[in-house]
Length: 122
Image (cartoon, rainbow, N blue to C red):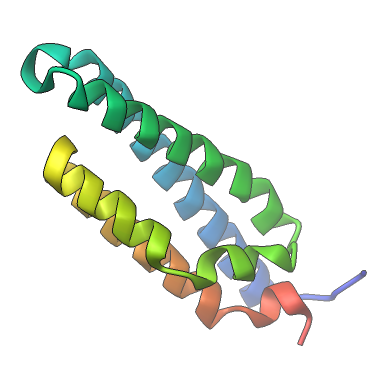
């Protein structure tokens, strides 16, 4: 499906993809730090760390779909349950920094949902 976009729309897509890339790397780095913090958090640090690494990798995978204007991107960001769960897990077991990353993910979610027309062609 060929969809034409204005320069402003292209810039919005580029910025959203850039934010998603940053979020992915933030989660991966946090996850690595948590995995290495076994002394401080015993088993919970690595468990939350692995969870965050997986979350980061999935966010990096989303970047290509954002750039391609894949309509499934909107559906992937519509629910908030995943963000709430990862926020609670990070708050309880992984530390406060994860809450900041969840807030950043909510910003990305808002950008995608408020620009859903870029992914649906409507």
